[in-house]
Amino acid sequence: ITDDSTRPGNAPLSFLFHSASMLYVVSLIWNEVRALWSDGLLDYISDLWNIVDFITNIFYVIWIFLRMTAFFIVQRESWQGLDPWYPREKWDQFDPMLLSEGAFAAGMIFSFLKLVHIFSINPHLGPLQISLGRMIVDIIKFFFIYTLVLFAFGCGLNQLLWYYADLEHNKCYHFPSGLPDFDQQERACTIWRRFTNLFETSQSLFWASFGLVDLSAFDLTGIKGFTRFWALLMFGSYSVINIIVLLNMLIAMMSNSYQIISERSDTEWKFARSHLWISYFDDGNTLPPPFNLVPTSKNFSNWFSCGKNKKTTGSMINKSRDKAQERHDTVMRLLVRRYVTAEQRKRDEFGITEDDVMEIRQDISTLRFELIDILRNNGMKTPTMNPNDTTVPGKKGRVMERRLLKDFTIGIVEGIVSEAIKDKEPKDVFSKIAKAIGKRSSSSKGKKDWNAMVRKNTIKRDPIGSTSEAIYRQSRQSLRRHILEHQGSALTSMDPEKILEYNPKLSDVPPAA
Image 1: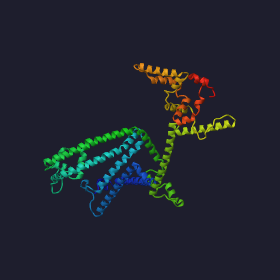
Image 2: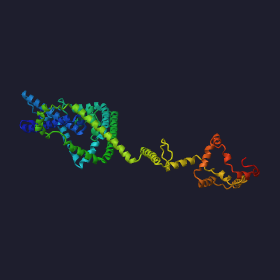
Image 3: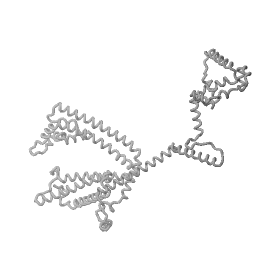
Image 4: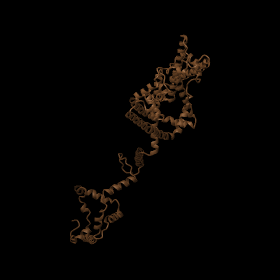
């Protein structure tokens, strides 16, 4: 049950080595248990390196348990008078010593991979380690699809070739003792494992990704032509999908992820380095493993002061809940701070807002009324102001008023009639109109831009019209209102001299009539 290293001659050296290894493993486990108790479950599993430590400790615990099992079996057979010392090649394939060696080998792999975490301090290896760590998600996605395709084709090939693989197995193990015949049936003893069950078939397809499976492995005993062709077609389809398509897709995904991550890898490396440094400042063990198993003055102080202080540490679930509440409060505080900062930044970027303008207008309006009240109290002549009027007249307001007035009036015909009648006789008016009609008919061949000409003449007068014309237009909007507003205006506006010019016979009538 044991090999030569555990024989009585080599027992002291082997026992010393394994005892020191077990002691160190126990100290590592104790360190992880204390970290789990102090940090809580959520904080502990949030760090991927803690998960790596947990897997490493599991393998080492399995190694210790199987070593103790093998030692117990050896002692039991010795007490029964049996010889437990026989060569390793005669052991069972699931012997506890073989299983313990496999667990110890896996634990050593994870232990040495933990050194990658220390590389984050190095300025050259740190950014590379950060980039590789960020690409783990892409690698996991690829292996999920890869395993699915591998399992699918493994089921198909195993269902197709298991019978012929069993024939190769019987051809290899034809001795009554059950030993393989490698001398006469070397090929049969080599290829029967390729497709004997689902596990072996999946292994064959996996190693085929690296070109380690030859097509001669499908030349099995008793296989028919169609079965061999169908199996080769399946194997070719698997090679195209998994080797050509999926493998190149993984390379493209990793290349794209690396380009994205490499732009900020330096910043993330500095953050990871600072996080690693700060982790050594946290409260933890006074001494590193394996010296953390030795009681210190800190432990004695905690033990003796436990009854005096009556301080309950609480369970791991309560600590995790408290940690979650603290994180929630921190997140809410950061959200409020981010909102306030964003509002301040927005105010700085946009400058004066509409609310600021309205506030200034209200202040100016208030100041205007206060100034008018002060001037009125000092005996000065001031205009009558409406307290409900909050508008502030200014240059911009006057310009807008002029534009509106111009848009709602016809400036082209303003003043034309008054100019034609002013200081002219009735005969001159009709003669002028006749001349204009004659000119228009005679010059119809040569078209002119009358709109431009009239616009030019009106602009010279007044761009927005006169006050009298505006009042005239407003009064003409309602005939009744025009009549009521201008009652008797015709009599007051008559000029006696002009009336005599129109009708000389009125000179005999007295002016009072």
